[in-house]
Amino acid sequence: MTQENYQNKFPIFKKTILKNNFANADAVVAHLKAKIDAHPVATFISTFDHYAHTKSLPNGNVPEDVLDTKNLIFCFGADLSIVEMLAVRPRSFGIMEYPDKIIITFLEAPAPMPQQTMSTWIGELE
Image (cartoon, rainbow, N blue to C red; front, side, top):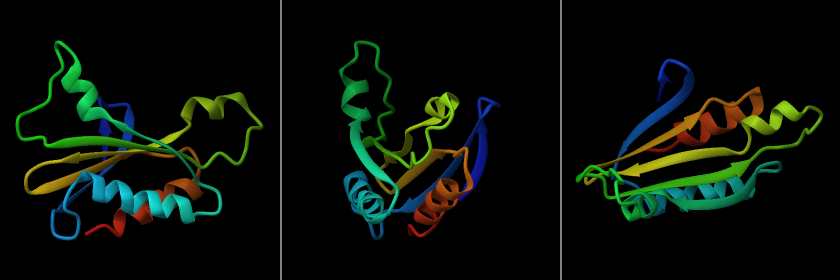
C-alpha cells in the first residue's frame, strides 16, 4: 500500500491487487462490506456505482480499460462532540477495476482507530 498526496492536499492511500482472489470490483466490495458489518463501530451506508453514473453523463470520462468503479461508503462515527467531524465523514473506499487488476483508494482518516482499521482491511487484500 502506498500513501500519496492527491492534488498536493488530500492524503490518500492506494493499493493495487491482481485479480487472483477477487474476480471483479463487486467481489472486493462484498469482502470489504463483510468487514464493515463485522466491526463493532463501523456502519455500512451504501455502495455508489460511480462507473454507471459517470458513463451516463454527456461528458463523462471513463478510460476504455476501466471495467467498473464503485465507492463503498461507511462510517466509524462514534463521536459527535464537534461539528467539524461531520466534514470528514463518512468514509469511502474507491474501487476501480481493470482487466488485470483492481485498485483500492481511501482518504486518510482524522482519527487513529478508523485509519488503522481501514489500513488493515486493505493491507490484507491480495
